[in-house]
Image (cartoon, rainbow, N blue to C red; front, side, top):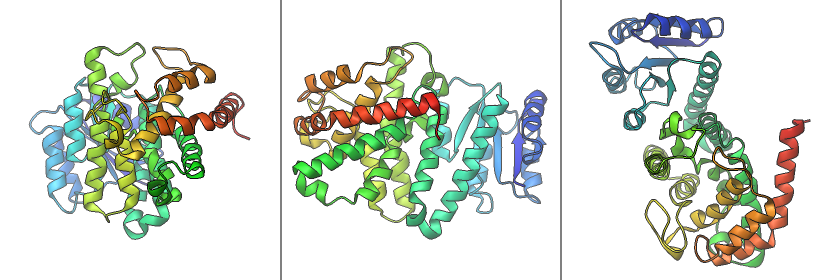
Length: 348
């Protein structure tokens, strides 16, 4: 049975979390970070749920100590917070936190988040011995973790990977950007695309799951997910082998919101200045967004989505890649119908 430390100076929060986890995990409810460190001298937890706002030693200081001590530095940490503070969340992720859970705690959400974090941590440790063998599984877990935070885009990662495969195969068939595309290993490229939105893990739940249209200020915050994703993957690259898988993932994450005419973000790149992975994902990402329901809009029909993308050729999208998309647009529609039927009736 996995051991979890719950550290919070609020007894009600401790009781709620401990009650939710009892029977599934061995739990220790601790009212201070100081008490946590005393217990950690004798018992090594598999995961720590750590409150940020505590007297004497707050969560950030406790995290600093955990990461500075070799014996504790690899323990996964999830912050508990009642703050509505995006900058604090980004700081926490930069310190090494795996996730943030907002208070008051929802027991079902808490259990699912912990399950995902423990599984992710286990897979990451295995990957140090056999990274290639578990690439796909690890990335799927991380991508699922991102989607559990963003309630408005369910299934987006899975669908965009399917659409991406259709589009890349058409580029190969037609010889568009032949030199670069033919040099790719598709079995590496496609799974790496699952991380294109990994930067959303650094965006507040309050913004990700807002039911109304975002304000201009909130949209500026959510735009940061490209830079956060690039930074997260860059840090993984620095600490692991210089793997082409991660370089593909980094380009997908960093550049999928750039536009052909230079009006995109985060860098405002123009034309072929934008890495090819970003130009391909731009069409795939927008198509899925158009045909999906969002809090601020109804789903467009497949035909409407195709016309919008066609109209934006040379503005938002690379014209050559747009032509390839138009060639396989009906295949996108087939996959869309399969996805909708599966959602409606469930998997066999």
